[in-house]
Amino acid sequence: MKLKYGLPALAMLVAQAAHADDAATAPGEKKTWKGSMELGVLVTSGNSKATNINGKLNVTQDMELWRNTYNLESLYTDSDEETTAERYRGAVQGDYKFNDKEFWYVRGAYEKDRFSGYDYQSSVSTGYGNRFWQVEDGSFFEASAGVGYRSNEIDRDSSDYQEGDESDRGAIGRLAAKFEYHLTDTSLFRQELNTEIGLEDGNSITESVTSLQANVMGNLAMKVSYRIKYTSDVPADTEKTDTETSFTLLYSF
Image 1 (cartoon, one colour):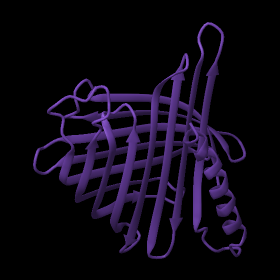
Image 2 (cartoon, helix red, strand yellow):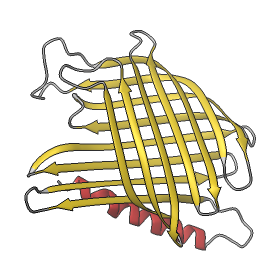
Image 3 (cartoon, helix red, strand yellow):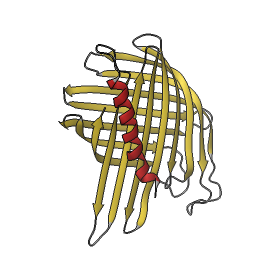
Image 4 (cartoon, one colour):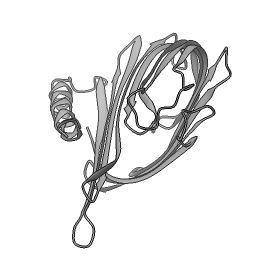
């Protein structure tokens, strides 16, 4: 699968571009770009053969009036030459800052999970957000609420597809919160929560990601994260709850 190797290469290119931008920043001037890239690889052989590759790229562009965030993720797992997990995700969000705390956001997200029962899942939303608490070391808590539209297209070519399974399209309400806390100068705790609720059918999709990272040398850190995603109404023969625990090496730039 070519895509599963593409994210680490893309992350390296973005990191180089961000580093060049940072190097061009005048002394005392605020850094515009910052981000991180993660990579976790597990390969086993012998009695059983398995490969697990996951990668993430998170980039923030913080300007005077706008704060833009870009997120890419990929996950690929096979066991004994059979693919057991394959997922690609991307999200872009632009925050127009009214002041140091309040902002108006516009967000778009796309996910393609081979084993979700959907061909793809996508959404767009806009709304109001507020950083209720933030301190100089970078720790903060923010929450936002908005409305939007989602289009989750059912995978009719899947072997699990059954008559009666329908695509999920319609208006949504979205609630989100993010908490980042610097435990020390070299360690960070992060909690993210996102909920989308169908305004017509009430179908909800809730995702929580909890992570802890600690620097091991320079810009390199070890990170452990736990992700849980719950969908109240899913296609036939598909679980409502997905969980994922990952251990990755993270590089900040």
